[in-house]
Amino acid sequence: MRNDLDQIEAAFVGTPLAGLPIGHGPAGTVLVADIDPDRLHEAWQAADALVPVLARRPVLVTDDWDGTLRFRPEPEPGPSESELRAFAEAAEASDPWLIYRHYSEDDEVDEGEAGYYARGVAGVDLTALVSDVALPTERQVLERTLYDRLLADADLYGRVSANVRYVTQTDYWYTPNSVLLMLLPTSDVRSSGYWVAFYGALTREYQQRLAEVLAQWHHRWDARLVASWGTMLQFQVGRRPAPGDEAWTAAGQLKALAANLDLNRWEVAVALSAGDAWFVHNRP
Image (cartoon, rainbow, N blue to C red; front, side, top):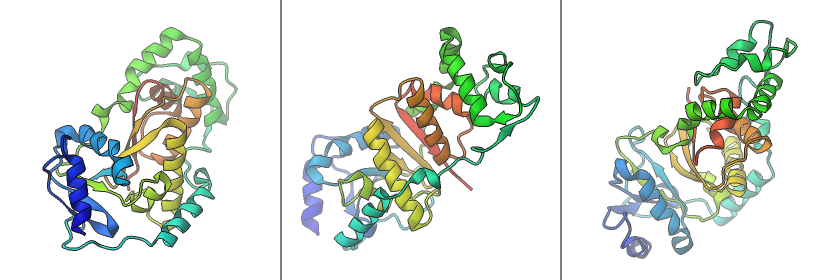
């Protein structure tokens, strides 16, 4: 309905979205085209500020690989109220971390392997911090011991932070060639998962679990989904996890969802306390 588009265009006046082409998208969404790839975050922030006005949660998407992301001549029906309510209720009743688990979660570290994990991906060798750990042991035990001891050494912690914080800055985010802003027909974070296309959530069950992740992270960290590029998700985070248990837990969850995030969990924990932009990468 044209009235919906007129209302959105009127709300865009005075924002970076003013004057951009707008039309009906798939499953009840509205698409805004010609988003400047150099101003992605700014465009999303403008739309996010309008959620109380439009009751539509925004997410950046790309048609680089998806030909279905185009304007429709008429509105396309989305889920019914009862269907969306059932989706959100199933998501809320689920425990996403039972199925989202990193493939290395249960690995054991054998004799001679501790140095491999303690050297880290970012280039700071912390082998000396775990030289007394009895092996074999669970990888998570080794990494948590390393992280706790790192927290007690301000100089070492600062060196690691300087080397890993890039993964929690917007400069690390992926930028497609062609970007659209998708306005979802809901303001509810959990329900918004119904429309999020992500390689790590290819079935309805996984979509519901992802929806619950979106809700949990929004509640705990004020993490808001900025972009969904198919195999990648990008979040703006309003509350950084504090070093220690908070950062360790958040790092485990991020690693569980982002199978292709190369940093070790202890490195991710350090990075999450130093930046406001989370990046999830899960690809074939």
